[in-house]
Structures are given as structure tokens and as C-alpha cells.
Image (cartoon, rainbow, N blue to C red):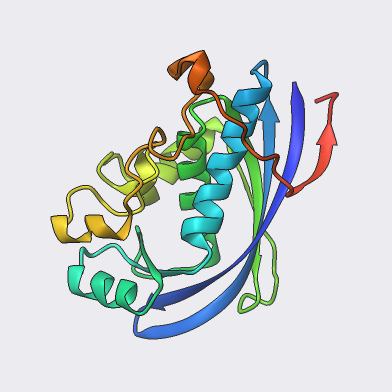
Length: 208
């Protein structure tokens, strides 16, 4: 088993309780990799990169109130509208949602067991989040159980499936297959392709 620390910096906007601001975030992901192929390792980190670079970086976080008009307005000015399960959007909510979504899209090939988040507006106070069995019920109070919510399923979608169909245009990549990021066991040998190595790993522990 290998333990890896993986860092991301991203800038995102927040529209919450009538407050509107941009914030600079840093999230550190602590992951463990068990016995999977090198191909699946590359797929796993490419999926993380897709979510963090293509969606979360350049996003505006909004409360999950199904305000389709607001989401359309945000997309029309070049940002990605991301709904979160809270009227008050703080660093810890973003952290719990991202870790939950990332673990789901990794399909147990790789697991995030701990993370730290900090932000400019939060004074770079670091919030640590460790996944223990005791935390599951607390997490579900925030996340809920509805798999139609984007943070509760393993697809690359970042909108809620039960929203108006007009917002499907926000994200054309509706499956990992369309992104060429299927797991090795789900594709034919002839369909395998080169996946670039990731460059955010800053520490690897082969003795985890």
C-alpha cells in the first residue's frame, strides 16, 4: 500500500447569504493506493485533475436551492455554477463535498482518508478532515443520501440530475467513457491510450 499527499490550489467565487466574493483555496489530499495497475492509477489521478482543474477551479459556489436562472447567469459570464448543500458556504462545507465526490469517482481504486483545506479569506487557517466511521452520520447530515445530487454520485457531472434539462449544456462530459477515463477493466485492450502523469504529488510513502 502506498500513501500519497496531493496538493491543489484553486480560485473560486462564493455567493452565499447575499455575500459575493472570490477566494483563494488550498486543499491537501492524503490518499492510499492499494494493488491496482499503473493504468488505473493514472486514470484515478486524471479524474481528480478533471474535477479540480476543469470544474472547481473557475467555479462559483452557490447554495443548493435549484435556482436555474442563477446557474444560467453564472455560466453565461464564463464561470462554472456549483451548488453546495448549505445556505452558508464555508471552507469546511467545500472540503466535505469535494472529498465525498472525489472518493466516489475513484470507485475505491484510490481512497482519500484525510484532507486539509485553507483559504485566503479564512486567514489560511487549516481545517483538517479525517474519514472515520464515527463521522459518517455527521457527514450525511450535510451531504444527504440523494444520489441525484452531484456530490453523491461517481459521474463527472457537476449539476444535480433533477434540475431543469436546460443546464445539461453546462457540462457535456456526462460519463467517464466520453472523457476516455474508464477503468482498465471496463475497456478493451485496443482502446487503452496514454494518460499523462500527474504533477501535484509532493510526497510518497511506500511503507504506509
